[in-house]
Image (cartoon, rainbow, N blue to C red; front, top):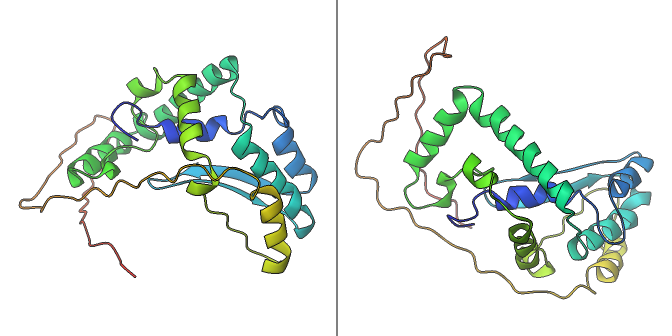
Length: 218
């Protein structure tokens, strides 16, 4: 992401449940439910992940569903505008209705001077309010391809069973362009950074201390 589209990865995660040209609306979720399964998604500072937990008999079904979702997403304008309101409410609930939300954002912004970990995954409210369908589709076209994806399967199955399904449903998708990773490097920290946050809603003072540690390397 960049300064113009903070939060776009998380916004598109929401839109990925709106249906495709082949599987409209809630059919994706309903199909998983018919097999007694569960599904959801999350966006972290580094990835957006979609997951399903199903019995082995539904493995091919979920692989077909995800293959379709990687290629044929449809974003309806009304659904998009509705989901923007959902994300705005999510930000209010998680970041703005309690003192811990803005304080946590301030700590991250102080801890990182160069790395994008300094920005909230959900984006800032003023960015959520102006995001467009075109921006979401551009992000989808840029990142949602096998070249930028990892498939993880765990459970009562074998590579011999999984590999033909992966080739059938994902091998036919154009690989796309492998997007370069931005490896921001923090400048040396030469002084203490301190955040003091006061809010009338705070009933019990608290203190926290954070450290930047070296990344683990293989």
